[in-house]
Image 1 (tube, rainbow, N blue to C red):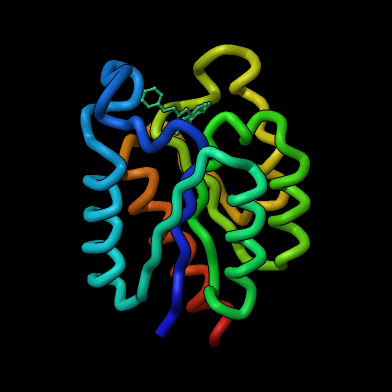
Image 2 (image 1 turned 60 degrees about the horizontal axis):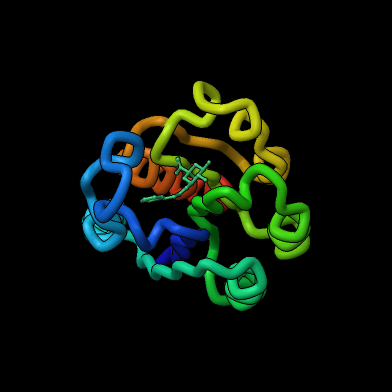
Length: 148
Ligand code: CA2
Protein backbone atom coordinates (compact mmCIF):
# COMPACT_ATOMS: atom_id res chain seq x y z
CA UNK A 1 0.00 0.00 0.00
CA UNK A 2 1.30 3.48 -0.87
CA UNK A 3 2.26 5.65 2.12
CA UNK A 4 1.83 9.40 1.99
CA UNK A 5 3.01 12.03 4.46
CA UNK A 6 0.96 15.23 4.76
CA UNK A 7 3.23 17.96 6.06
CA UNK A 8 2.14 21.40 7.27
CA UNK A 9 4.35 24.36 8.12
CA UNK A 10 4.19 27.39 10.37
CA UNK A 11 0.95 28.86 11.71
CA UNK A 12 -1.25 26.28 10.02
CA UNK A 13 -2.02 24.97 13.53
CA UNK A 14 -4.02 28.21 13.94
CA UNK A 15 -6.43 27.45 11.10
CA UNK A 16 -10.06 28.02 11.96
CA UNK A 17 -9.04 30.14 14.94
CA UNK A 18 -8.03 33.39 13.15
CA UNK A 19 -8.39 34.97 9.67
CA UNK A 20 -11.29 32.76 8.48
CA UNK A 21 -11.86 35.26 5.62
CA UNK A 22 -8.50 34.27 4.11
CA UNK A 23 -8.05 30.65 5.16
CA UNK A 24 -11.62 29.43 5.83
CA UNK A 25 -13.18 28.17 9.04
CA UNK A 26 -11.89 24.59 8.99
CA UNK A 27 -9.28 23.66 11.58
CA UNK A 28 -6.16 21.71 10.65
CA UNK A 29 -7.81 18.73 12.36
CA UNK A 30 -10.85 19.10 10.07
CA UNK A 31 -8.60 19.17 7.00
CA UNK A 32 -6.64 16.15 8.21
CA UNK A 33 -9.89 14.21 8.72
CA UNK A 34 -10.96 15.07 5.17
CA UNK A 35 -7.57 14.00 3.78
CA UNK A 36 -7.73 10.76 5.78
CA UNK A 37 -11.16 9.99 4.26
CA UNK A 38 -9.85 10.73 0.75
CA UNK A 39 -6.80 8.54 1.42
CA UNK A 40 -9.09 5.67 2.47
CA UNK A 41 -11.09 6.09 -0.78
CA UNK A 42 -7.86 6.05 -2.79
CA UNK A 43 -6.55 3.03 -0.86
CA UNK A 44 -3.41 4.68 0.51
CA UNK A 45 -2.16 5.16 4.07
CA UNK A 46 -1.54 8.66 5.31
CA UNK A 47 0.31 10.24 8.21
CA UNK A 48 0.34 13.85 9.37
CA UNK A 49 2.92 16.23 10.79
CA UNK A 50 2.81 19.98 11.48
CA UNK A 51 5.58 22.17 12.82
CA UNK A 52 6.29 25.85 13.25
CA UNK A 53 10.02 25.13 12.92
CA UNK A 54 11.96 24.87 9.68
CA UNK A 55 14.45 22.33 11.07
CA UNK A 56 11.67 20.06 12.35
CA UNK A 57 10.08 20.06 8.87
CA UNK A 58 13.47 19.22 7.33
CA UNK A 59 14.00 16.39 9.86
CA UNK A 60 10.54 14.99 9.08
CA UNK A 61 11.28 15.05 5.33
CA UNK A 62 14.53 13.14 6.00
CA UNK A 63 12.65 10.58 8.11
CA UNK A 64 10.13 10.15 5.30
CA UNK A 65 12.87 8.66 3.09
CA UNK A 66 12.31 4.92 3.05
CA UNK A 67 9.21 5.34 5.20
CA UNK A 68 6.89 7.15 2.74
CA UNK A 69 6.35 7.11 -1.02
CA UNK A 70 5.45 10.78 -1.39
CA UNK A 71 4.52 13.98 0.41
CA UNK A 72 1.70 16.54 0.26
CA UNK A 73 3.27 19.71 1.65
CA UNK A 74 1.94 23.10 2.67
CA UNK A 75 5.15 24.87 3.73
CA UNK A 76 3.26 28.04 4.84
CA UNK A 77 5.35 31.20 4.56
CA UNK A 78 8.53 29.10 4.14
CA UNK A 79 7.23 28.54 0.61
CA UNK A 80 8.44 31.96 -0.36
CA UNK A 81 12.02 31.92 0.92
CA UNK A 82 13.22 28.62 2.40
CA UNK A 83 16.04 27.30 0.24
CA UNK A 84 16.74 24.85 3.08
CA UNK A 85 13.33 23.23 2.61
CA UNK A 86 13.77 23.27 -1.15
CA UNK A 87 17.13 21.48 -0.75
CA UNK A 88 15.56 18.99 1.68
CA UNK A 89 12.88 18.13 -0.89
CA UNK A 90 15.37 17.63 -3.70
CA UNK A 91 17.82 15.70 -1.52
CA UNK A 92 15.18 13.21 -0.37
CA UNK A 93 14.20 12.50 -3.98
CA UNK A 94 10.61 11.99 -2.81
CA UNK A 95 7.80 13.24 -5.05
CA UNK A 96 6.23 16.24 -3.33
CA UNK A 97 3.01 18.08 -4.21
CA UNK A 98 2.91 21.67 -2.92
CA UNK A 99 -0.50 22.77 -1.64
CA UNK A 100 -1.95 26.07 -0.44
CA UNK A 101 -5.36 26.98 0.90
CA UNK A 102 -5.26 30.45 -0.64
CA UNK A 103 -4.42 31.44 -4.21
CA UNK A 104 -0.86 32.65 -3.64
CA UNK A 105 -0.69 33.96 -7.25
CA UNK A 106 -3.39 36.51 -6.43
CA UNK A 107 -2.06 37.81 -3.12
CA UNK A 108 0.84 40.07 -2.06
CA UNK A 109 3.88 40.08 -4.39
CA UNK A 110 6.06 38.18 -1.91
CA UNK A 111 3.56 35.29 -1.89
CA UNK A 112 3.60 35.00 -5.69
CA UNK A 113 7.07 33.46 -5.50
CA UNK A 114 7.46 29.83 -4.50
CA UNK A 115 11.06 28.65 -4.15
CA UNK A 116 9.64 25.18 -3.48
CA UNK A 117 7.65 24.79 -6.72
CA UNK A 118 10.62 23.95 -9.01
CA UNK A 119 11.39 20.80 -6.97
CA UNK A 120 7.75 19.67 -6.68
CA UNK A 121 5.77 17.55 -9.13
CA UNK A 122 2.80 19.92 -8.93
CA UNK A 123 1.11 22.76 -7.08
CA UNK A 124 -2.54 23.13 -6.00
CA UNK A 125 -3.54 26.52 -4.59
CA UNK A 126 -6.68 28.50 -3.89
CA UNK A 127 -9.06 25.60 -3.41
CA UNK A 128 -9.17 25.64 0.39
CA UNK A 129 -9.08 22.13 1.85
CA UNK A 130 -9.69 20.72 -1.66
CA UNK A 131 -6.11 21.77 -2.48
CA UNK A 132 -5.05 19.00 -0.08
CA UNK A 133 -7.45 16.32 -1.36
CA UNK A 134 -6.75 17.14 -5.01
CA UNK A 135 -3.04 17.33 -4.22
CA UNK A 136 -3.25 13.87 -2.67
CA UNK A 137 -5.06 12.51 -5.76
CA UNK A 138 -2.38 14.05 -8.02
CA UNK A 139 0.39 12.48 -5.95
CA UNK A 140 -1.27 9.05 -5.87
CA UNK A 141 -1.84 9.16 -9.67
CA UNK A 142 1.86 9.99 -10.11
CA UNK A 143 2.98 7.15 -7.79
CA UNK A 144 0.67 4.63 -9.48
CA UNK A 145 2.06 5.60 -12.91
CA UNK A 146 5.61 5.14 -11.54
CA UNK A 147 4.60 1.60 -10.44
CA UNK A 148 3.38 0.55 -13.91
O1 CA2 B 1 -2.49 29.61 1.53
C1 CA2 B 1 -1.73 28.89 2.17
O2 CA2 B 1 -1.98 27.70 2.44
C2 CA2 B 1 -0.42 29.46 2.74
O3 CA2 B 1 0.58 28.47 2.65
C3 CA2 B 1 -0.72 29.80 4.18
C4 CA2 B 1 0.46 30.50 4.88
C5 CA2 B 1 0.94 31.68 4.06
O4 CA2 B 1 2.10 32.24 4.66
C6 CA2 B 1 1.27 31.30 2.63
O5 CA2 B 1 1.66 32.45 1.93
C7 CA2 B 1 0.05 30.69 1.96
C8 CA2 B 1 0.05 31.06 6.23
C9 CA2 B 1 -0.61 30.13 7.11
C10 CA2 B 1 -1.11 30.97 8.25
O6 CA2 B 1 -2.25 30.41 8.72
C11 CA2 B 1 -2.99 31.15 9.55
C12 CA2 B 1 -4.10 30.54 10.04
C13 CA2 B 1 -4.92 31.21 10.88
C14 CA2 B 1 -4.64 32.51 11.24
C15 CA2 B 1 -3.52 33.13 10.76
C16 CA2 B 1 -2.68 32.45 9.90
